[in-house]
Image 1 (tube, one colour):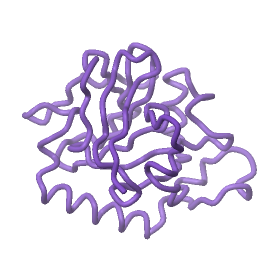
Image 2 (tube, helix red, strand yellow):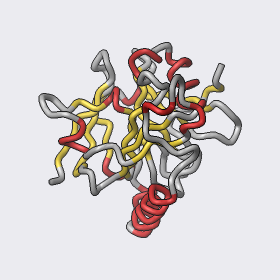
Image 3 (cartoon, helix red, strand yellow):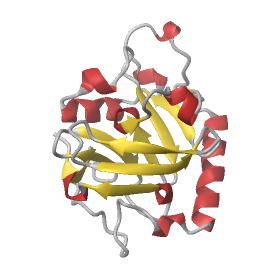
Image 4 (cartoon, one colour):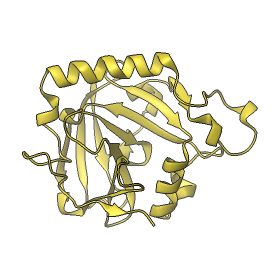
Length: 193
């Protein structure tokens, strides 16, 4: 069943809503890549963002279903490499919000679990179970303890490409809180340190 999910930074200055989310409306995974780990370190919140193996719990969805209602002035982004993902966060308290591609033409955001306010429910109840672990070659510790692929599984990629195609066809790339009408990011990307 689809439901609306509150989005909030830790201090509450940035707030929004992800509309009509469910396990079928997006793609939940745990990413162990070194870039996600570097982003968590950049924010100074690795202990809260990463699991014991360095993974980040992410829900991939269309940005057209995400609205930032309050505190948009606190929205900031960075990128680790000149052509890398835009990694969005609340500058007020360094809460990660999500990752987008560097262009608005492909409507996609990977929301990071720390900004998802699900109340008394669990993430599993709201956005479904984790479908896969990806980029496991960067996982920390004993990889035998986790279920992951070295990169991304073909099933996860096929599911995501199908969704991207549908979201683009519906015009979701024109409705995003991360890019203005000209396709420029609403916050100038900072370089990762």
